[in-house]
Structures are given as structure tokens and as C-alpha cells.
Amino acid sequence: MKSDALRIGMSVKHPIYGTGTVRGLTEQTVEIRFQDGNTRTVSPEASALQPAEPVASVEGLEVPLGQFIRQTAEAVVGSLGLQKPDSTVHKLGSRWNGGKMLLHPADTTLQPKEIPIEVFFHKIVMMRNQLRVLEQKINAHEGLSDGEKVEFQQYVTRCYGSMTTFNLLFKEKEDYF
Image 1: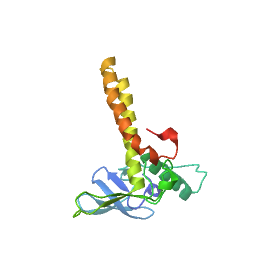
Image 2: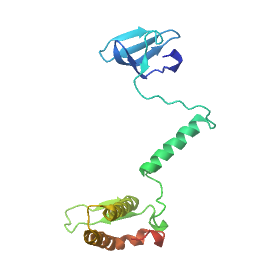
Image 3: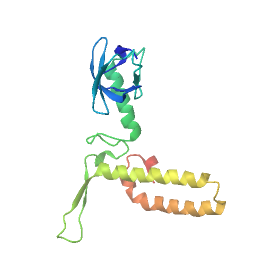
Image 4: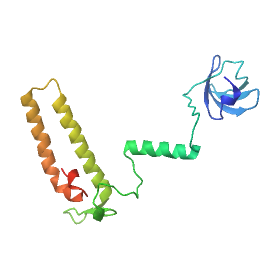
């Protein structure tokens, strides 16, 4: 492995000493702290040092690195369904953005519970999405007879019916239950 491919903090594998973390670099040597607790200075090329973790190389990048990282992070956050706490939920009706849901228990000695409407809305939408997946799995299941599929489908339909109360939260009618 060439010295210019090494970075401080990188995990590397040495054929004799095992796995370690790069602590220092010079032109000819690398200082590595190995898992046995010993720090050794070795020549990366002469010692057949290898990366102990996956390494990525992006060549021919047409955008600044900061922009590339930002776009990649935004794509990951979006695919995971994560949001900034202060972001608006696009399918939520605008009159509800920033709103709160307040639950008062019947027992007056207990404190009420306040929930941001976006959190509640997100949970409702996730429940709807999971029902859709369940519906698809029922319909595609090879081990169920048509009668059983219809029976299970009725339960899913009843769940959708119970959730129509929450349609008032949606901006567009096409998103209703």
C-alpha cells in the first residue's frame, strides 16, 4: 500500500501485527497503534499493509466536494424518511403546520400530553404505508387461497375505514384513507 493512500484514523491490516489504526504519517513510514496496544512504525509498501475497511475513491467529480457530500447526505436522509425538527410536512394541510395535539386525561391529577402535529401525522402516514405493504403481501402470497386473501383484505379495509377520521390532516384528497 502506498503512503499517499493512507489517512490518519484509517483502519489498516498488517500481515504480522494484525489490525490497527493509523496515528501518524511520514513520507516513508506510518505509525500504527495495533489492537494489542502496541504502537509500531512500519513502511507501508514493504510491509504489505492493506486497508482494513472499505475505501471509496471518487474521480472525475464535476462538483465541489462540499456540495457532493451535502447532496449525498440529503439523499440518505430523504431515503430514510428523516426530517429536520422544524421542517414542514408537505402532505400535511398547511393549517396544521407547527400545530400541537393536546391530550387531556380524564384523571385531573395527571398532566396533559402535548404532541407536535407533525409527529402524529408522520405516525399516521407510516401506519397507512405499512397497511399498503401488508395488503400487497396478502395479495401476492402463494400459500393463501383466494377466500383467505379476501378475508384478510377485509381486515385491512376496516383499518383504512377506522383511519378516515385523520383525513382532515391531509392537504390533498388523493392522500386520504
